[in-house]
Length: 237
Length: 379
Ligand SMILES: [Zn+2]
Ligand SMILES: [Zn+2]
Ligand SMILES: [Zn+2]
Image (cartoon, rainbow over all chains, first blue to last red; front, side, top):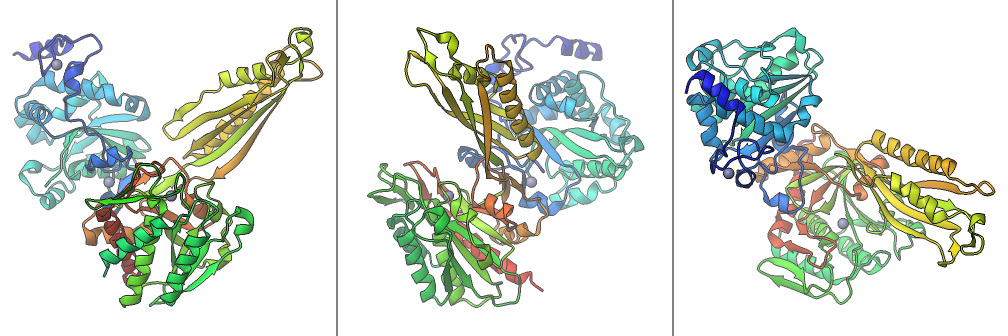
């Protein structure tokens, strides 16, 4: 598919990604029935996104303010919003977005998270995709987080506020501890984030090391609050 | 350290001692005997005069092994009903009832944990600060024991209330709550002969209620109208009508503005109602504070020993806000910082209430580790 077709196709999505049925006007990306089968993340620590056993949900707990982990870790971001667990088909979709350059899918996922987190649009001052380094951008041709943010916002996101100043190894090749070292000092933010409430958008959050480093750069330049929105939350075993 | 059989047996004994609100005497004296036999000093405060209970709150003092600041633990003595002729069923490691009564694990699981803690401290020598156990009365009927607790008897400035469900979940916040009563005074008249001489209080009240928006106000606030009454005969224009409700919020500003809104609405309806007769209707709105909100921040030192206990036991604690009040609201309001720990009890206030021994043991381990951590961190 040509780039133009990819873009056009995005503007006229018609079929459920899962079952191929025609979508009704209010349905986004997947039909209502298939939407219910997706691995939604029902309960997680809202401070750090840590996964929580769903048995607590059955016991009437529907919101976690913070956990031992994040209250000792002192993350630079203030809140995490995540829609899915990193499982099939979400994991497969996100890999397709990243490595198969599936623009349509990226936009559609962005649109899908918008249907759940639209309240964030008016709640924050800036929405910024987590940037790639220039090398990685050249190698891959696009930043999947930018595309997700594009779909989420419905327009091109503002991505000049934060840069990746260090080319790091892909986090997926590293263990937990190495991930924190790997991204250290990787980002630099511009002064205009001062006093702003910023929403960082990324595809997957695993240890939180990457978004934490990005949030740190934003906070160093005086950002008031940093929220993180990811399509899926993964956990290192 | 923990003797599981002893813990379970004690828990079962505590369950079998009936202790509905205001009738906590037997249970309180049973506990005082246990703690005195262990060599710890026990006190009853004079709260009974105000709570209407048979006894005051029971306070137990356990001397420290180190000169660290004291901490308190609290559990409530009373249970909700129905609790008569309790039949305990113990099956597959789970305590429950035959379905006719509540079990009373709320809050006897908390009490059992503290008895076991006292025994562990008697048998093992490790550094720990002075401990104060507070066993409150009348928690279930408006947190009365805690409200009238004699703080002169308590040296600790912070502590842990054992009164929620899941051992790995700590409650660090709860809302404020007010109840309110709206009274409308109208004027009686015969509804068939001279209705124009009357002012229909029910009608006025209805107009007011129709403009309230009960339910969820925002993410952290709710409102309810729970009781309505008024009128005596179908052929009389009712002279008075009343409604009662409550508001809750984690945010004190929101709460103030909700109170203001309801008061303004009362004034507006009173002013706008036509026709008026002899300055009637009169609308009055009264608020009564039930409990005050609290919120403990992630870096508060009161959570430190909990996190340390979690590290030792391999538990990632989750910290939540709850939607109801408990003794912890009162402690925080009265200047004693407190969070709520889980004991393992489930489905409390229902006849399906149960508790897994596994969870009760876990909760006990957590409490013992908290005490140890407190001792070890003291320099
Ligand atoms: Zn479908
Ligand atoms: Zn957390
Ligand atoms: Zn209770």
